[in-house]
Image (cartoon, rainbow, N blue to C red; front, side, top):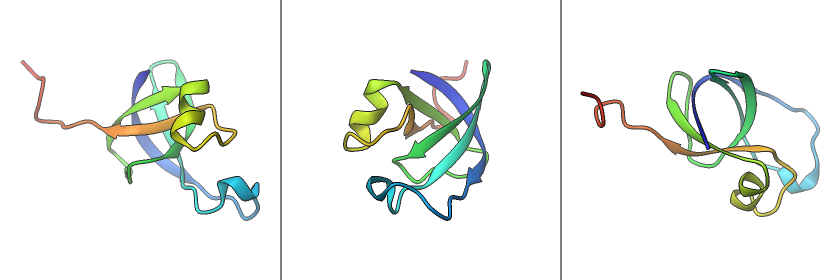
Length: 80
């Protein structure tokens, strides 16, 4: 899992039927940018938790995705 920040949205005019209704977000991580399927309703500027690889596909009902946003991180918690 990785932490990243949502920087934008990817729009697809055509996509596989198993991805119908799915929103894709651009998430910036320390290693670079990732396109992730949004499972929680995140928006631009949100700090999020990403699931990657086969774990991400399980969150998306076995759809062919490599990354999924699975949590929006609370900015007020865990900061010292």
